[in-house]
Length: 179
Image (tube, rainbow, N blue to C red; front, side, top):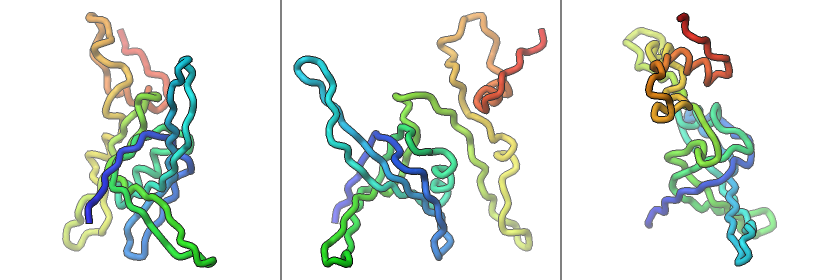
């Protein structure tokens, strides 16, 4: 049986729902809608029929999706297309298309987004508590890039201060450096 991979550009249609399976794995799901549009001969854009998928992600990615994506936001999703079928109570067969996502994120053709590195679990030493976080990454939980691109800044501009960038991404006003 062959595997079909798909990339869809669309909008998050529901809030992300996260849960933990009986085996302890985290899973997150949300609905993704994508509406194509086409231009008529007179130049006006006409919307097509909206296609809907269920997007499913597992493990640490599921935790990141739950914290990052919200209903109404534009996203790009890449993954394996799976068709799930089941028998309904009335005897008919139900069917849904699920994208088992391998990569996903905000669609930057529709706006801006800031990346924040996630703290990751560190394997515990023998006899130590099982769950620890990487202290280096926890201290560095700040955006990894700025919305100000170096090629658009004046040639005589001072270098970017990472603390200013972190403040700007969190909604705080960046502080001007002391002269």
